[in-house]
Image (cartoon, rainbow, N blue to C red; front, side):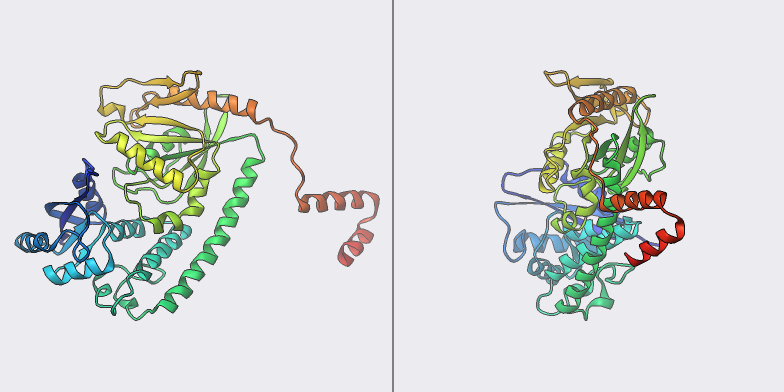
Amino acid sequence: MKATRAFLVCVVVGRVVYQDSAEELALLVKSDGLEPVGLLDAKRDKPDPAFFIGSGKVDELGELAHELHADVVVFDVPLSAAQQRNIERAIELPVLDRTQLILDIFRARAKSREGRLQVELAQLEHLSTRLVRGWTHLERQRGGLSKTGGPGEKQIELDRRMIGVRMKQLRDQLKRLARQRDTQRRSRSRSDTLSVSLVGYTNAGKSTLFNRLTRAKSYAADQLFATLDTTARRCWISNEETVVASDTVGFIRGLPHQLVEAFKSTLDETVHADLLLHVVDASSSVREDQISEVNAVLEEIKADDVPAILVYNKIDNTALEPEIVRHPDGRPKAVFVSALTGEGLDLLRQAIGEFAHQWRVDNPNEPRAPEPWEEEVAHDLVALADDNIEDFLVRKKKR
């Protein structure tokens, strides 16, 4: 089947320049199953209200896209509904902005029930902002709104009320799943096992590192957003030490707010972790920018105060050597590793083990108060010990 041909548009607004924006946009487009065929760079002091890039650039865009026989134009910035509609009319081609592109990739990658519900909610929240002047603009969006897909032609007749009803249903289902996840997390927290969450920019190698540490088979691939569903596994640090490690969704510049909101229950694994392993692609020329983007998302979900160790991965693609870098007080600050070759993983386990030892000193495992159901069971056991089974069951039934 012939791939959809995509013409890319990278826009620099003001003085904020992302050195890898064109490369990252191309990776996003390929992750969505599209074929990049051309690129237009644009610079604006501020977005044009009607076209974002201005009418002159839109004319140039239309000519280039048609010359290269593009099927769709993809912008590296979020567009308003009016801007997207105006550009589509001017160039006579469908347009995707960065938000829609990432939502579409998430829809394709979500495997678990919770992940699919979260993506559908994010798509509906985005769609609810596009209900302007009829549905002609939405007719060009791909996917479906049904349980098996995202927004699309079958759902054009949906109005705000129907979207609102569906969003409420999704939130209710996600709340139930979040309660289950919270119960599991509380069960883990009752033990003295350290909870470790892997975070980082998408494609930094989190899942490969997770698999190395836990000997699990979490899906890992050299593509953006290979992992959407949180996976938790026990990880052996040494003969005396184990931790529970969680692999989470990767972050990216301009991660749509709708996705952050929809995935909050999943990201709670990060918020409630005892330690974050912030995985960084050491071979990336923009790794410092990527660290900043991840830190911004951590701040948004209120996980910026969780202790973290930077894990510089993929040193096999650099001249860097495995090592532990320490804070002035001796605590591990960063570890340089290669999840692919295994270099430095012994140092990473050592760093986690040191943190776990200090964590136990600072958080002694004190006896917890019993849950109400545990008190009831204890009461029943005492009563059963003092009585015969028939009398006990009669009194139990009366209660």
